[in-house]
Amino acid sequence: MKKIRIGLFGAGRGINLALNFMLQNCEIVALCDFNEKRLTAGAARIGPGAALYRDFDSFIEHDMDAVILANYFHEHTPYAIRCFEKGLHVFCECISNGTMAEGVELIRAFEKSSSIYMLAENYPQMLFNREIKRVCDTGTLGRLIYAEGEYNHPRDPWELSYLREYNYFEKHWRNYTPSEYYLTHSLGPIMRATGATPKRVSAYTVFDPVTEICPKPNRNIDVSPCIVTQNDDGSIFRFTGFGRSGGHHNAYRVCGTKGSIENLRDNSDQVLLHYNAWQLPEGAQETSIYLPDWNDKDEELIKASGHGGGDFITARMFVECIREGRQPEHPFDIYSAVTMSSVGILAHRSVMEGNRPFDIPDFRREEDRIQYENDRLTPFWGTDGSAPSYPCCSHPDYRPTEEQMESYYAVLQG
Image 1 (spheres, helix red, strand yellow):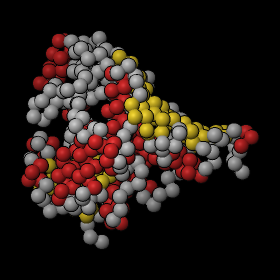
Image 2 (image 1 turned 135 degrees about the vertical axis):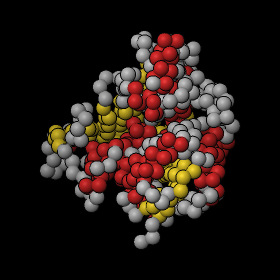
Image 3 (image 1 turned 30 degrees about the horizontal axis):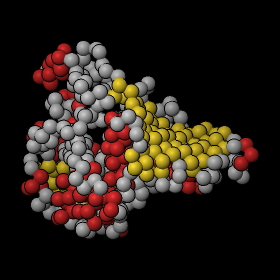
Image 4 (image 1 turned 45 degrees about the vertical axis):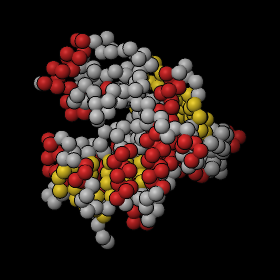
């Protein structure tokens, strides 16, 4: 079988993704990163043979079949469009668009291309989330009417190696990302399990300024955003963006008219399946707690992969789409990706505008796209030095203290 030739744009997080593609008869033929140190370190992990580039213009001319976009969180759209113009398939890490206008541009460009596009959202492939979907698909829970998703990832401000590797200048996107934007790890799994798509969103958050003198350069200090959506099938989702409350955990729950299923909040892979006593499926118990099986031919490779096996499985899904000449299924397709990213953008606006609800556009409809084709509001600094045009925090005037910034600069220089 012919190897798929893949280029990697972003040699930090992207290297872990690339290694999973190499396990599936793919060849990493090119690496691109503006950071020379990261590029060299990434090349050492990939092994000899890949061409190295410092700029995307040269990289995109390399002879390849697909590109992994693992550059900055909010900057995927222009590079994905360049790939579409070249007929290259796109595997996009995290969100698809950083602004509403970018979502419109991305889909318009995609529809003119022959490319396959997949959102590299890996949390739906964790063992417990696969089991939640499997049970939902049996129909034994009845009509699925409510679901919850929590990505809760508090971080020690004194984790200095993290700052040096992942947050290495003041205007870095991590310092300006609204908590609502980082939502695919919480929303993706429940969209996949239920098949539902958000159509209306409102959101709330908690402002929690850090008072400790620590290296804390973040301009957004909102925590535990609570996002609520009404969906296309009448169901409701309640989920977080980037949660930072309590202990670290990922938690998901789907409720139907006859029962519910959720993973345990103990950082294990166990699930709790609970039916109403008067609606028990044949042979089922009212309540059962168990560890699901993978039931997958690649189980050992999956277990060795990152993010609970999700990195390997999402890479495998993309390879299968390329070999079979088809687009990925909901919620990994481009329309789901832009919808998810736009839910985050509009959830943040809900927070900033008194928690009012926003309708989510249907990006398959040109009349919906037109409403947002010029909407370029962004909380991020541009690569051209342009300043943010929208606040990233519910308290727009918040700034880290001088002592916190001095501590941060000292870490970077150390």
